[in-house]
Amino acid sequence: MTTGPISALAPAKVNLCLHVTGRRPDGYHLLETLVVFADEAAADRLSADHAGRDRFVVEGPAAGELDDADDNLVLRARDWLQTRVDAHSPAAITLEKHLPVASGLGGGSADAGATLRLLARLWGAPDAITTRAREAICAELGADIAMCIESRALIARGIGEDLTLVDGLPPLPAVLVNPGVPLATPAVFGALRNRTNAAMPSLPEAGFAGAGALARWLATNTRNDLEEPARMLAPTIDAVIDALAETRPALARMSGSGATCFALYGDMDAARAAAEELSAVHDDWWVRPALLNPQAEVPLASEGAF
Ligand code: C5P
Image (tube, rainbow, N blue to C red):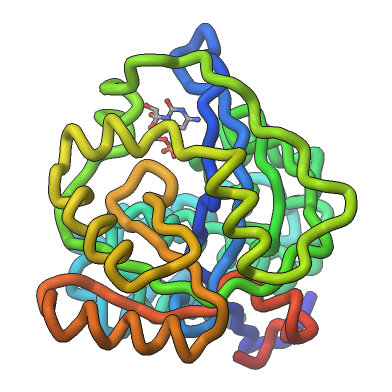
């Protein structure tokens, strides 16, 4: 048991690459994906405290985009954990929503992952969300949630339950762009023509000299297999990739099942300048400069303070 309130960042997830390598009998696709998380520039914020009864409040600039707070993944995550922790008690949870909803930034999964971390701490039950629980979390709550519990650089395999933490990746100055077109994940997987693509090559043992070296390695050796079907369903993604390419990044690519795309730059000044350029022309797009994989630069901030 911890005395509250406690708080956590729920950072945006970016799939630097995503290879679809097969399909399970139940229809889910087998993936191999290198995932990093953003810093506080692209994150929701969660807080939790002991309370007389369960409560859930959504606030923040993107709160209005959630039309049914009762159907939020945060509540599904809380309810799931309650069934697994005998010593659970009522909790007041506040979600400060900044990330655009249904954008492919994993915001809902990030919120659920942060909820599980916070409540496991509040209820003194850290074991309830350890490695052994990952399969159940992915199957019962959502395929991206186990990786969001970690919120640091990793390779995810299976449908997202088989995680290998990756050390030594450089921090990546980036711009994230969401054009605001709705794109349903099942539709993107459904439009995939080739479901058995080559696996992701192993990361070089020597690591990467910096952000540029990692971006070049990604461009040469990896893909996002969901980019083609997503572009077919939402041609706006072409416009986003073209606009990002014009800012001369080291790499511009779609993340996850879209529609959010990212571009990588040599430093944060270049990322900020690119974001300004893009915002000036496309004022209807959500554009954010952010540092991906910030843990490589600063020690992971202890939860409780963001
Ligand atoms: O589990 P989650 O809610 O993230 O997935 C949404 C949908 O995306 C699934 O119902 C499935 O149609 C598709 N999906 C898939 N393979 C994955 C992840 C998601 O086919 N690995």
